[in-house]
Every structure is written in C-alpha cells, then in structure tokens.
Image (tube, rainbow, N blue to C red):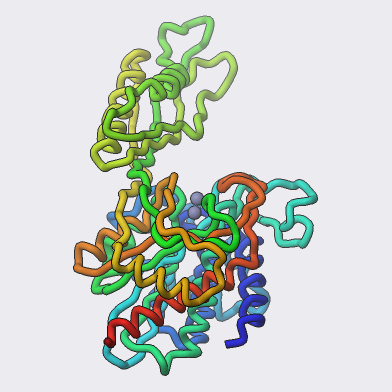
Length: 434
Ligand SMILES: [Zn+2]
Ligand SMILES: [Zn+2]
C-alpha cells in the first residue's frame, strides 16, 4: 500500500466533504460521492431508503425541504459527477450508504460505522482558520463539519480502498456503514431497525478528537449519555397587545417559562444528567400577543433510568408552562440515543493490533465519552445478537471545541486511523482462524 499517496487522498476527500457539509437526513451529495467510490472499488452497495426503517425515522425535514436539498446536492456534485447524480436518485430521498465487501471465503462479518453529517453552526470567517486560508471552507450557510465527520467519511473511504486492495488476504465479509444524522441522534436507530448490523460478529466505530490529542489512540470510549431530543410547539392565541390582551393566550411566555423551569429539574442522586434548550423562536410582532412559539431542547442521563426520569420531568414542566398561560404544548421526539459498553475482549484484541502497528505514541485503555452517540444502538443490537462491539477514539489536536465554528482537526492523524482500523480487522481475522 502506498500510504503516502493514500494520505494525500484522505486529505483531499476530507476537504471536499468539508466544503459541502450536509445536515442530518440531507447528506445526498456526501452519500453519492461515497457510493460512487465504493462501487468503483467493487463493493456491493445498499443505498438510502434500502437501509432505513421509515417508521423509526426521527427529526427529518419535511418533504418540500428534502426536495430543495436534493436539488442543492445535485448542483454541488463534483464536476463530471453525472454518475453520482444517478446515485442520488437511487437513494430514493434518504441518505446513507452501506458498502459490503464479500471475500467469498468463510469468516466473520465485521461491520464498521462512519457518520457523515455536519453540525448546524456557522463556520468562522476568521482568516487564520485553515479552511478559509486554504480554500475549502463550507459553502453551505449555517452548516459546518465542526465535529470531524468529514474526516470519518474520508477514513471510511480510505479503509475501503485498503480492504479492496487486500481482498485476497481477507475472509468473511466486511460492511462499511456510512450513517446519516448522527448529530441529534437521528440516523442510527432507523438503520439499526432495518437490520444493517444484524448478523455482525464484530462492530467497530471511532470518533476523531473528543479531548484526545494527536498521536494518541483510545481503545474503549465509555459513558455515552442516554439522550432524548425533542421539539416543543406552543400554540396560543394572538390578540391586540393593548386593546384586547385578555383575549390572547401567550405562547411566548409559555415557552420562556418552560425554558427557565427546565433548568430547575432536580438532579438525580444515581448519576449525572443534562438539560439544554438550544433554540427558541416566538411571536410575530411587537404589539401582538404571541400565538406561537417553537423550542428545540434535549435531555440526557448517565443511565437509561436517569434519562427517562429527566425526560419525563421535562414533559411535565413543558405541559405545566403551557397550562399557566392556557396555551397548548405539542412535544415531538426528534432523536434519541442510548448507552452501550464496549466489549473488553474486543478492546484487548484491538489494543494488541494497535500496539503492534507502532504508529501511536500513547494508547489509552478507557476514554470518557462526555456526550452522546447513536452508534450505541448498533452496538447494543450487535451485542444482543451475540457479537462484540467497540467504540474507539482517534486522537487529534483540535483548533477549537467540537460544535464550534472554529473547530478544525489535525489532518495528519487520518492515515493512522485507517491503519488502525485495518490492523484491527486483520488481527480479528487471524485470531479467529487460530
Ligand atoms: Zn457532534
Ligand atoms: Zn461527532
């Protein structure tokens, strides 16, 4: 393998994904680029709707917005991307790709998951920010790959290339799952319910950064928080603010009361929890009693029990805030993530492989996750089916925190991410054969 050449390819791919970031359920261009490459490498493809259990989909934009996003993604396809345009139509209005490499030889099923969506945040315009300096900043307003999923997609494609070039040395089959909508925990559940990881003996996923510096590798990321993402729509009644305020029902005050009171949910003695109201829009005009307010919020807990407790209390608070001002609250779940523990045996095998590889200065056994992650649905499903699962961390120095518009990764670590994943797959196949 020409690793130097692959490294250049990874950087070019990552920069291409970075320039055209796509939010949850609209990753049509990203998926088409991935599919086009995988098919060129000889992977069996399963695209879009084929990988999605529609009743399990949460937090997807409405059909008119999907239409707009499909048009936008087609216009942004790489030059000479006619073939890729076919991939967008094949996906039937849902993003995401699963590429399967069948070796034709007996062996385990190994599934790997790469998330491909961006964050809903504006990228900084600061001239020292490398994407600005080197001309690959986001062209899509209020969208930015500030969680490093551009690197995840590139690493997945890099691994696809290595695996394809060494197919004759492999056994069993390998599934590369490119998942839409990780942000807000929206995509993994619908894919899992469709069975994309069913029958897997091993499941691997990996995140770049998250507090681990360049040159380090985390074998087992633990403690993902169980989470529920939800929208609240308060409906009241607009009225003249001076002439007839008594005839109005104030949705703005309901929402504001809810936003503040949600922060007062009592903590739980069994472990940590979080509540956040991320957006709140209300009202139409200065002299009008606000008839409508919309809020995006989330709750999290260290265990499923704590997460259930805090979400249940949040619903009670929202309904209470509606009752105070005689408005109505409609709560819609927009995403959810659970927790899952990595398998110690798989972590040990991965540790052996990564140590032998010798490209990391420091290998950490356990890394606290800090946030939430919906790959946990896939991990659980694989474990329930008798397989083993692991969530790892590829260390990278970062220019700013995740989900901040000045976030940037250390591109030089990506190649070692590919090498680590390949080494682990190789080790698994060899140790199975013993
Ligand atoms: Zn993120
Ligand atoms: Zn992320």
